[in-house]
Amino acid sequence: MKTEMEFEDLMEEAYQLPNGSAKLGFLEEAARVADLNGMVEEAYEARSEIVDVATFCGYPMKALIAFSWQLGKFDQQPELYDEETLLWSYKWILGKMPDFPEISREKIMELLEDFGARFKSYGYSERSYWYYRFRIFMDFGELEEAGRSYDKFRALDRDFMSDCEACEQDEIMRYFMLKGDDEKVLEVAKPILKGRMSCAEIPHLTLSEVLMPLYRLGRKDEADKHQVKGYRLIKGENDFVQSFSEQMEYLTLTNPAKGIDILEETLVLAADHEDMYAKMMYYAKAAPLLRRWSEEKESEGYRLRLPASFPYEGDPGDLLKLADYFEEYAQVTATKFDQRNGNTHVSSLIA
Image 1 (tube, rainbow, N blue to C red):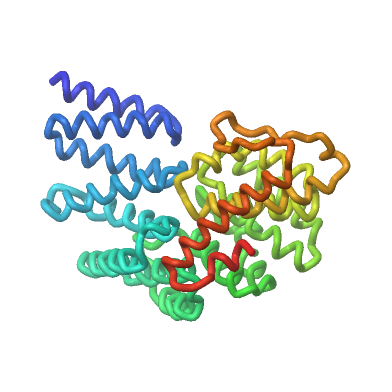
Image 2 (image 1 turned 90 degrees about the vertical axis):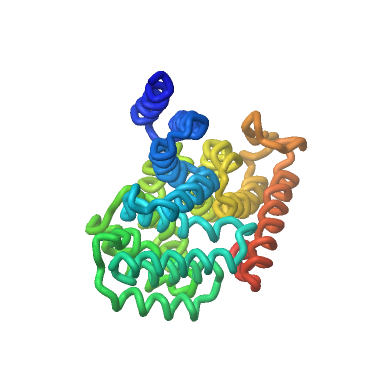
């Protein structure tokens, strides 16, 4: 009884906290207690929460590990667990797997096919399978194959297991961004920017994504408004590290002093982030921002405020050397992605 109470107490504490490392800590301890005492269903419950929290607060590797445990238990005794909840989590996991270069292409495709087979066996629409195939091939940088999957998923009916329309719209935007079609990006973004589509992460992601397309099309006034609103929505949230990079890229060209403020406010979140892709993009955009800032008069004698835990031993006042540090990290990481993907797609994104 004491063990059950301890587990329930830990879960109760977790439920009272907002998503973040503190909540995750309670959930991980609850899972540990359940494991030690052979409380399999309780351990499964705790890991369901870990997957949810970790996916959306900057700890996707913790989510991958917890989900792998869940999937094994589900396959042993599927009658004990809810397949809808598991398959929703599976979608989150598929969306995060390509962000880790150490996860092979073969493993990602194997899990995608497993995901598709499970959806089909429970009678759900194949739309989710083709949608995640679309996303994964964008991550691989294979846009022709992504385009074929795009046509497939758009032709299939939605069901209650489909991602929300706002999330799908944002991924379609990404497709046209990768194709270099700024006009089409903004056309697809229109229902989001006008408030007709939204969810927990949209328009948060979208407002930063449209900054460079708007800038390239000469619509800086619009971009400035979206930059302010977008940063207000994501400030302090470590699930938006890639959005911080998009903010910095735009501000490097338009207001480097403001970009430096964002770099100093968000570096602690980026440096500790488990998502290798998001961290790489952040570091890749920090480098040119620092170089641009070093050209400004206000930067004379400026020392970048680094987090105490940041692993840089050089002089934070030497902005160019600091820029080199960020750039080297990004390039090394991009090479790992390229090796996994079998092309130079990711390196081209940070060039």
